[in-house]
Image 1: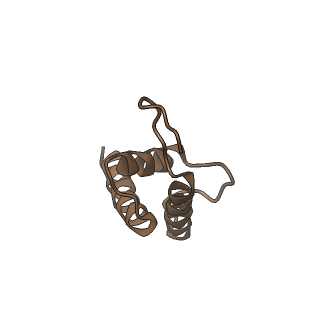
Image 2: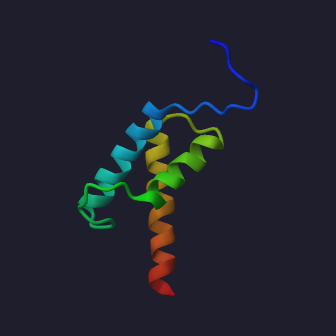
Length: 78
């Protein structure tokens, strides 16, 4: 596969599956609302983790869940 040096390639499948795992868990625990729309904050966390080298969907989901919960706790405390 030819690739331009300046083009970033992301594995959409891994990111999508990690998002599904994390969003499902957070919906079941009531941390995010039951809605068909993508939770942009959660997706952004997963993409950042992926860009920093974590390419395993379960690890991405678990780390994103922890960060999302920490971030939500800080907002509620403020």
